[in-house]
Length: 272
Image (tube, rainbow, N blue to C red; front, side):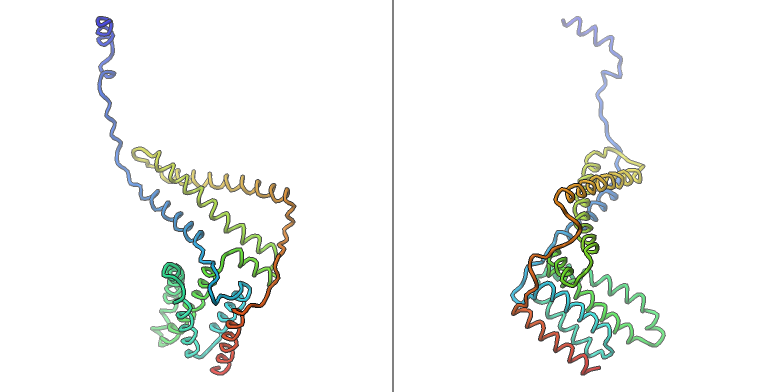
């Protein structure tokens, strides 16, 4: 047996007897890392729900109503003192939220304020610096009010509030399904990016092709899921109409917010 093994070893070529030590060339994974972080950021914002009613929280329908009224009053007023009062009121409301919610609300507000400030910067050099201050303050108040409504109320309650105001069912359906599919497809894209990162060995010079593959797979998956959703809705007898089980009822908390809204309206007309 030993002689046979020696004969086999002698007959084998030298390259088969050499030890393989494959060292893949280094490659940057900034594309995969940034893409993964971007998807995780979107999913974290989608899954974050402050939507628990506080002690003094009004019903979602009334919250949507007075938020729109406050935004309209802020946009229409010409007295900067009223704008400062609204600014102080928004800051007081933010103080009742946890630090995590405040950071998320102000993160969206900061971008809107910066963009409006950049657009209005030429007005400051043309002799109208007060316009920059007035409009950026109004933008801050309006966007923060929308953020408070978004993070203070869950999405299903907001859609129910839209149904109270006779918003078309097609619009509610589109908004509801869009948000749900962003979350679902974001999870699928995250799994694809993770699989691609684990299977990437060595240097990949064609990262654009990998990105197009991720988009194509996500698109095909979304098409498949849309067909499945349509079939399931047909099986459940969904006709595109949203029926609200509970009618709007005025609560004690709504009375407090109603008084604040009336005071704000009176102050608006008095300062006007």
